[in-house]
Image 1: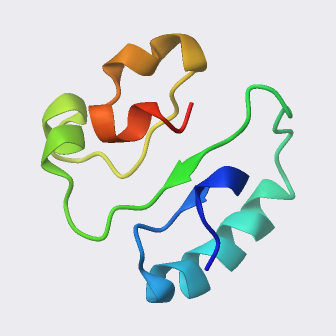
Image 2: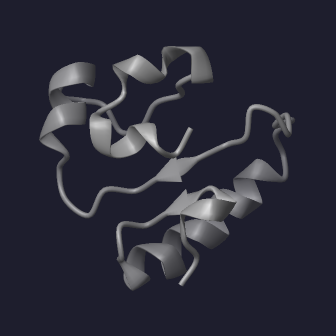
Length: 80
């Protein structure tokens, strides 16, 4: 399973990885994503209460620049 070092974290969900990674890779081919800072993708297996509280009830993802890392939950800070 793809793990954190390459910018993908599926939270041990093989199903999410097999479905979401190919879709993300297809979309990312059409975007100009800079090499630095690197892109990190985190996929929660269930609703993430910390991110839900921080981003509101309708969030489905977010972009965070490295300089904003203090706004991330402690369990995601190491990815930066």
